[in-house]
Image 1 (cartoon, rainbow, N blue to C red):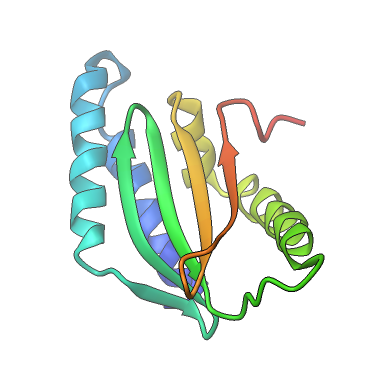
Image 2 (image 1 turned 120 degrees about the horizontal axis):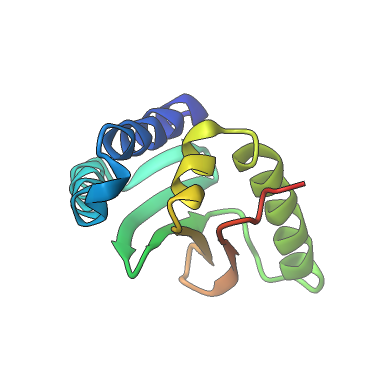
Length: 134
């Protein structure tokens, strides 16, 4: 899966929420859950040769992406490097995309949980409403 496919996924979530009036918060939450359930059927999916989205879930206003990084070896300093690099990339990419900003603006959190190929936890990064404000 390329980044464009991830954008399609997020655009679907955005459009589903956008066309549901804020007065119907329960309905928009239902629509978001439905979109995520549909997207789960396409998983796991590779973003690049080393990055795989294994699962997407939604509960308690938190969208959780569970991601495997195949190249992670657990060498000294590697976890700190990955955490710093991933946080910078997420901030740079997500904070400039309307779909993500819209989801955060609705009071949702977006969490990325990264593990190695052998399921060793690497890092977990959560964006909360207001995160992308300059």
